[in-house]
Image 1 (cartoon, rainbow, N blue to C red):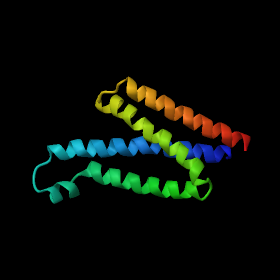
Image 2 (image 1 turned 90 degrees about the horizontal axis):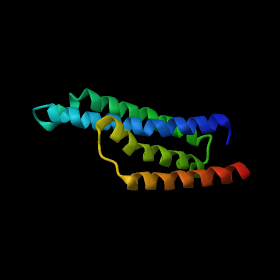
Image 3 (image 1 turned 180 degrees about the vertical axis):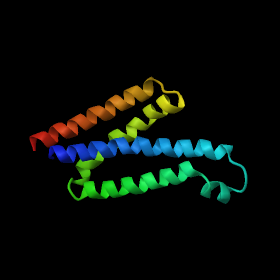
Image 4 (image 1 turned 30 degrees about the vertical axis):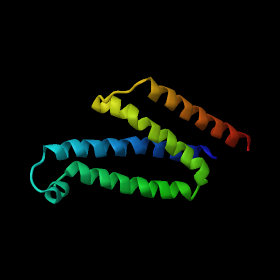
Length: 121
């Protein structure tokens, strides 16, 4: 894996929690809207932005997969998914416990094992 490929994968890892944060913000915004659900959905600017973000990140993922094997790129996406609860805690003050820390430490350990194996290959 080249440095460019690693940076692309890391960028995608950061894009995942951003998208989830956008969807949570859209859900909170939607709760303040009134009227029929279809009208609320089409008038929910944060939701439209979240869908646009996901469209862009899907294209970004597609580009990454033209350069990096899925088995390796996906390890980065797991790290990004693991960041979602941390961002939820920071932005929305959602509770986190020691189990999250332990689980994320295991995920990071697995990621390091994969990257170490890749470095030797």
